[in-house]
Length: 186
Image 1 (cartoon, rainbow, N blue to C red):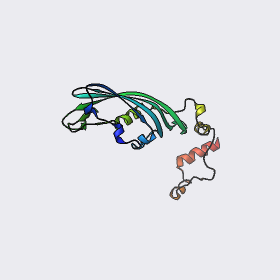
Image 2: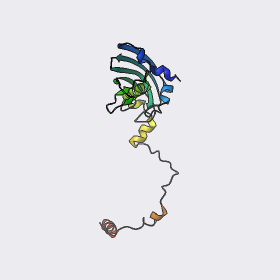
Image 3: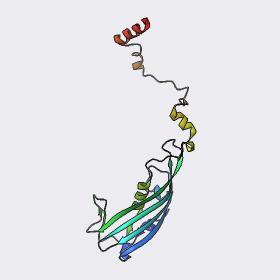
Image 4: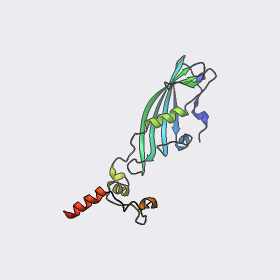
């Protein structure tokens, strides 16, 4: 796996203006975050750090593919990602992240760790619905089961009845018995 220094930008040595950085993100990068929603990814992240006197803009553009499970049939599916996002980083008295999702770096900080920004940008770029392009690409057995055209319930499994309720099966209310008699008479 890549070292953390590969995802740290020493911003104190950068002059005022724009600075471009590129990162390649694979499954090893994402494994540290225990991702939910995808199994593996091959992402290219093009970033630009625009440094000002009292703040920075960190623009991230992630493109690539993510392997996930199809929401329709649960078979593996590959989804494309193309997402842009801007993060604001300010300089302040202490390092913290405020309610507006703005990162504030204190005077003791000298590098910007961008791992969290890259992970968040990728997750935000995931499609809300991850399915195969057409139903023909989905697992046909699952689609048959979903439409009800095939019964996949095991034949050998009998419905287990709690013995406490078994005695109640023979009982029915007098209204139900009266209705049954009327239906039989007609």
